[in-house]
Length: 210
Image (tube, rainbow, N blue to C red; front, side, top):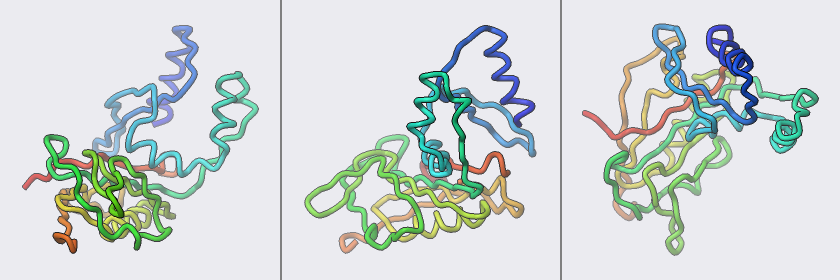
């Protein structure tokens, strides 16, 4: 991937005398073991940010200053050897029409095994409720994709809201024993109601299909 995609991208910028400062996030698709470029982003995307940032052990502000002041070569980028897997939970109907204000149950029992990024939540009295299509992304670290994914899915199963959807296949294309690809819908009881160099894997939640 580095030889076929990353280095040619950087060399192309140099060849065209383009001075670029910032992120280049390359969206890839795994096709029979070969990486194919889907898109270039000149920013960190969502939920890609949630799977990349937790693995950076360096002071990110120090790195940003290195980019601004052309001292990045003096900085050290420390990256955790662990794998990160992020699972995004979304509202029922997303990316189409969806309802807001669904009470999210079980957040108190999540503990510290995963990092929760609140993308579309709000407070309503004493309740945490949904306020967007993408609701909460769950990121976990592990010594393998399998371990990290298992942690994230265990965390996802510990909370719920009415109409909650999430993909159940995150990282499976990179696992040794890939299972069937499917999507999962989880509804809350009514009141009571994702390689050593590329270690992060994530995907956006999608509307359930039968």
